[in-house]
Every structure is written in structure tokens, then in C-alpha cells.
Image 1 (cartoon, helix red, strand yellow):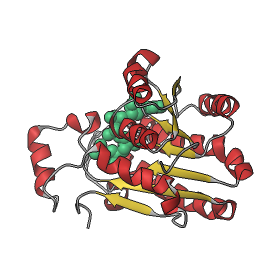
Image 2 (image 1 turned 90 degrees about the vertical axis):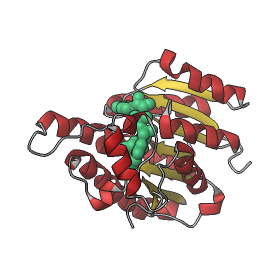
Image 3 (image 1 turned 180 degrees about the vertical axis):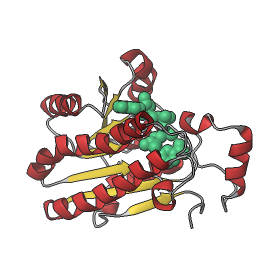
Image 4 (image 1 turned 90 degrees about the horizontal axis):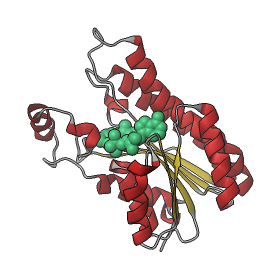
Length: 247
Ligand code: NAI
């Protein structure tokens, strides 16, 4: 039990990589708080599964892109649980289109949720991390934030932004014993990537040296490692979890 007594917040934690992360953190003893834009009915099965594992779990409906809502949610969590030790900025969306067809609203919405949402949550938790002199902030970037990807100018820009944000906050908070890292998944089998055509899926898989998609658990395992004391001297790092896709 590497995270006994720790309080973890996972944004967008009700499904996919976020939910796999919640389960992994809970299996190591953490109390897990899911924040998600979905309603509590949608998140209920996730909370139930965590509770059946013996974990303390709670859901807050909250939009990461809304600064006031993110701050209010963080304040409520700190009030109820006494503080936050681990923040996983996982909530994210795609609006894939070639630049020629990409509307301003497609660009703005992806930046608002993925990049501004990560800023909002870090800003809302920043002071309490400073005061606690302990913390783990782990944000979901993507390999396309490193390599770029046709049809994902908005998404790639948001994920590249998360990498810059991560490294900058790591430099600010290092002396406070708060580590700040990002993970950069490749092609992971979730609802987000399920919208791709079979042809597109096969083409991506063919380009992966390990010849398979990643699982949400592949990503959750690395996030849990970064949250644990095993990673206490790692900060400002971006770890790719991609089966070799972006080598
Ligand atoms: P998903 O679409 O299955 O889950 C995303 C979750 O975020 C959902 O529960 C959704 O309700 C929530 N969410 C969306 N907008 C929100 C908002 N404004 N406020 C709060 N919650 C919100 O996605 P998946 O695949 O699990 O992705 C999780 C993270 O990993 C995302 O940041 C994504 O960009 C990143 N990622 C995923 C990859 C993949 O291949 N699936 C690859 C690289 C990165």
C-alpha cells in the first residue's frame, strides 16, 4: 500500500484512463475523489466499484474549463478531506479536423478544457500544495504534443502547452517538495479513440513497434508510480507510454 492516507483528485475520472487511474490509486490505499463534467448518475458505477474495492471515494460534478467551478470544487474537497496530496489532470476532449475545416470554436473548446482546465486545477490547488510542503501533480499530455499530428492542431497545441506548463510549475514548486510531471500516452483503447474508423485504428497499430494499442491500465500504472514515493526525485518529466510509437 504505497499511497495509504493520501488524498487523490482525478479530473475526468469516471471513465477511461481517469477511471483506471482511480482504481490503481485506490488499490494502493489512496482516498479517491473523481471530478467530472458528467452527472452523478453517470459516475455512480465508478464510485460503486471503488467503494467495493474498500476505498473511500467521492464524486463532484465540475467542469475543469470553468475557473470558478474548479476553484469551488477544490475548496470543497480541501474542506471535507483536509487537503489534496495528488492531483491528476486527466479531463480532456478532442475536436479533430484538418486546419482547413477547423473552426475557431473547435480550437477554443479544446484549449479551454485540456490546457486551461489544467491551469485552473493547478491554480486552485497551488497554495495548499505550497502549505503542505508535499504534493504530486500529474497531467495528461500526449505523444502528439511532442510530435504534432495532422488533424489535431488544437489538441496537439493543448498537449504541448501542458508540457510547458508542467515544466514551469515543476521549477516553481520543486523547493516545496511538490513534484510536477506529465505522461504522454500514445494510442490507448478508450471511448475517446473508439470513434476512429477501423481503417484508421489498423493504420495506427501498424505503426506501433509493440503492434498493439495501450490499455488505460498501462497509463494508470505510470501515473501511480509518479504519485508514489518511488518517484520522489522525478519532476518536470514527460513519460511516454506508447509502445514505442513516438520514438
Ligand atoms: P475519455 O473521453 O474516455 O474520458 C475523458 C473524461 O473526461 C470523461 O469522463 C469526460 O466526461 C471528462 N471530461 C471531459 N470534459 C470535461 C470537463 N470540461 N471537465 C471535467 N471533465 C471532463 O478519454 P481518455 O481516452 O480516457 O483520455 C483521458 C486523458 O488522456 C485525456 O486528457 C486525453 O487527452 C489523454 N490521452 C488519451 C489518449 C488515448 O489514446 N485515449 C492518448 C493521449 C492522451
